[in-house]
Length: 192
Image 1 (tube, rainbow, N blue to C red):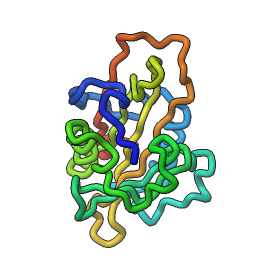
Image 2 (image 1 turned 120 degrees about the vertical axis):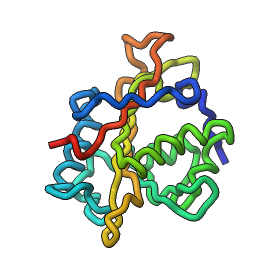
Image 3 (image 1 turned 90 degrees about the vertical axis):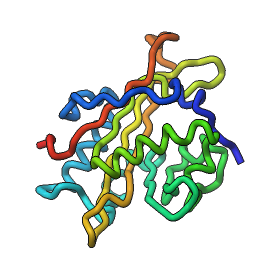
Image 4 (image 1 turned 180 degrees about the vertical axis):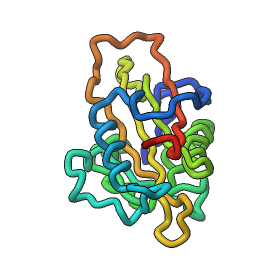
């Protein structure tokens, strides 16, 4: 099993969550912006879209990089429900279905991953990250990651996170060694 250390995610542990952004205008990656727009369309006039609203037929352009995480009674509190082929390849796995998320990260790194997911759950908040999302082969790719909360179809409480990572510009010609990971929490109630 391949475990991803926090250094591979490209940030120092625990970058602060920035809470002063209230729109998807901060999302720099076109594919992430497209997924965010899909989430808004699914939501309609509700507080959050339901996990049952997600239809792979609607997002064929995202399937290789999209993932669905769910709260679960497993170590770490989250498990992978589904993950695209590129995500699975990145973890050197044939499948990630039903794998506890904590198994995929070093013990010192996972609390930072969980903090962001728990922010989606408790806010609820949309989490957008931009900056050094991976470190590999002495390269510092700049990209983005998006976590979108999804509600349980009956209770309406957040139970899952639809996410996507975009590293389309890897390696970026304008990346710098001092690029950092910025983490934003967007309140869904502020979006129109």
